[in-house]
Image 1 (cartoon, rainbow, N blue to C red):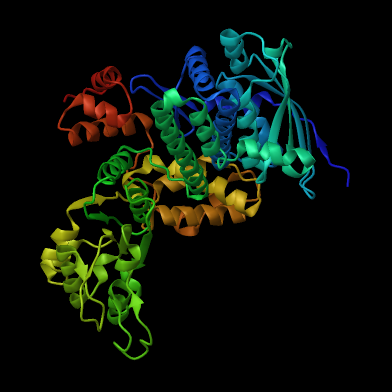
Image 2 (cartoon, rainbow, N blue to C red; image 1 turned 180 degrees about the vertical axis):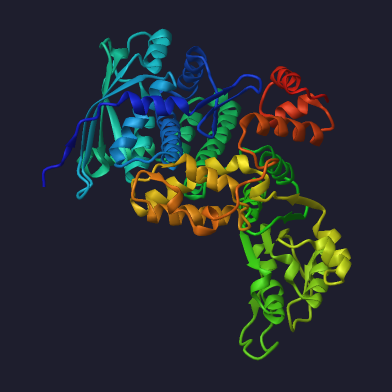
Length: 562
């Protein structure tokens, strides 16, 4: 079959969309591209780092290191953009990559031709690079080169295309401005299309040969043995970090996107981020559907235990006997059906995290054994005679008021204080209505992609109905309502009639906290922030994501005082 050729001319509209992802926060010292932090480094500084690599490791080894660095950078960018963009074909992703490199000021990439066959997987792309900073810095430090030198650019395009197409894609620079040419050119192909050259090209991108190269350098330069030892350790650590980065990026791309623009949810994420590195037991409280499990997983992923197991159990879904066996394990013959020894989840978790969901539903006898496990850091299997040490961190969640359960005598007070060493309370959706529009949009895009429907927005009337509803099921109910609306929608926008009847038939919102008046919402947000931080304008401004000067002006406009 003849490959279908697709001409890649980046549209201005897509370029504008990518540019809007850049978020500058000069008052915080933070720049973000979409949701990942980026930094601005001068081309001269990057050129000096590049020269240091070449002078220390030699040109061939430095080339391989920069190829791999560029590959990781491109792969990371592609996965993040893919999670936020609705690409109709992988070729759209390639166009986005060329524009992203241009926006980052690294090079102006001009995709000349893309041939891609969906069925055979054959791929070939020709790209021109104008004003490459890498070529410019090489000529500045070493003069005109006999070979192509845009190594990190080659790696970046290889990594980006590999992530877009889900297969090995490798680029090779054919013409370089460091050789005296007007611009640089490169060609990319799938690994199979490189034929006999594939093995040598792949070897440049593999990490396994790096140790051998460093060993060769150490033998050649005996006088710098200690320095090379130090650099070898740094390079090995960097390789491990890059591999871990790829895994986390892939996991993040597959994870559900979490919207938390409101002050209340920003406070929740701040608490989760602060307690994550500690080994403190955490209790996450909130109504059903508010996102408790997401916060628990965030705590695990941001902890020092992130590489260890994460195991979870719904305590309300099992009987007392089964729950005890699942948590603590059992010995063979402990009860009817126990035909072999079984490790409990505390053992399975090892040095990781065990998540006890719906902790308020466990029976009193299990409460007593759980309290002992938390106090003594040891358990005993059902039917067992010896104690086993445990090392897992415990994070629990509940949609019940455990203080009321303690007062009613259905939950042990001492267990409550053990579990509640650090409590994070998630607000219901009706108390963070400013998150409803972005959540609704996110769910609509996700549902439309899954169902292959052209639904892109929520109409103003439908959004008003969503804002007016009380959401007893919180974010989960909102997601299901939007998914239903996408199924019923026969236009590009979700309308009121597409929403569930309980939403469209609910009474209009009363004046007060549910008002849609933007000025009133802003005033109330400022009041809540000042209240939460006891009138401290600096902390209130930080929570509101505005400067202290802006906060002072708006306080004056609304007649507010600290």
